Image (cartoon, rainbow, N blue to C red; front, side, top):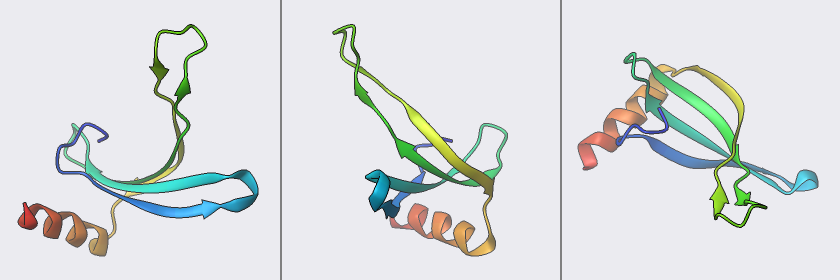
Length: 79
């Protein structure tokens, strides 16, 4: 779903004591299931000096609710 070109990503909330920004993404899986995933982007520079190593920490994932499906469809109609 992270590779879904039609995904909708929004800032979910900020965990102040951990300095952590959480994001919500609504997107389609390869199996054609629409999901809502909450995640944290923990990408940091790789210690090997070869650039950045992408690290995504998944908080939760579930099938999208009706209103989330409507958000996904509305975003597609805007494009």
